[in-house]
Amino acid sequence: MEEGKAAYVLPRYKNAPYVTIEESDTFGLIDIVFRNLQMESGNQLELEGAKGNLMKRKFTVQTVKNSIIHQLSVDDLKRLQFEYPEVYDELFFEQSDLLEEILTSKMEAI
Image (cartoon, rainbow, N blue to C red; front, side, top):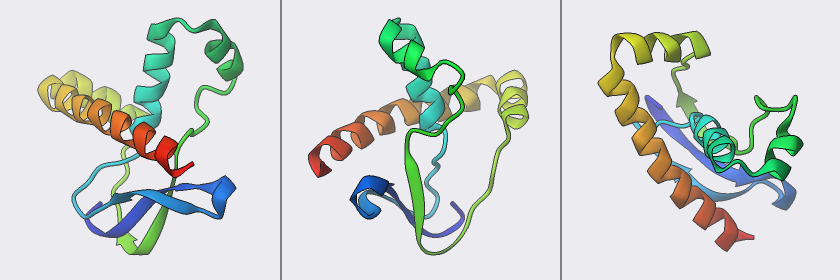
């Protein structure tokens, strides 16, 4: 996010925020990391539940104030992985750490 403020929210609880997203933070890749962990774990129930629904977001983000964000497409991510593998790896490593924080905060909020 270039400018502004957003948060991960719980739609079932009137969009109650549980993790704040500040300027210069990245978001949106959490869903990809989460899906990859589900697939790596081989949890058949989770995979069957996700069948045909792999691209559906599991985490909802809402802006808290006017924001300027930049978007990467799946093709952009593929290109990044090929052309700048160290940047790609660092980005996804950071997202793995963030996923742990978000899941912990989400459980505490519920």
